Length: 123
View 1: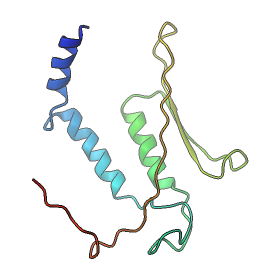
View 2 (view 1 turned 90 degrees about the vertical axis):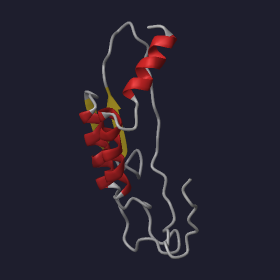
View 3 (view 1 turned 30 degrees about the vertical axis):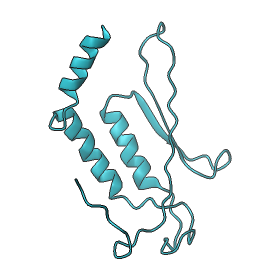
């Protein structure tokens, strides 16, 4: 596919009101509602008082990846290799195609006190 054709296709499919974009926004909305601030406790002022294993956010991500078509998605729980769970996903396309690897991680964020947070006006 030529880059100009691909550009037109992307502009059509990735519209804010498109089914594709709305589907992904729904998942992102679910994800940001999940309390996934930190693995530890009391790392930041206002942080949780009991540790989290991040299970809920990882399961949400796993379900999303399966929904969009990845063939195998699992959460590793091997405490011997890593104290943190790892989400792994793969899909097979073709022996002739190169392997593509994506790496991402969940950032922990300090507790946000809405009363003290300076909000920026929307333009």
